[in-house]
Image (cartoon, rainbow, N blue to C red; front, side):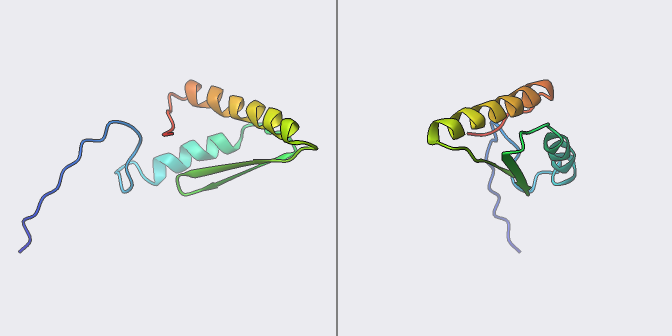
Length: 86
């Protein structure tokens, strides 16, 4: 019989295999995917990851468009009291 026990304090985020996964996170991601992103932006969610892909005519344009889209995600997360890990 294995009696090894390992514990780790979680200080932020939601650990893999937590009791609120995947149902709760799916509900949250579904709401996030309803944000009105620009046509030049493609947002893909897989498990607990989010990919934001934006196209533009120059690097500067892509940076500007991406910052606009990330601002939308930031406002959504603050409104829903969700913090993302870096």
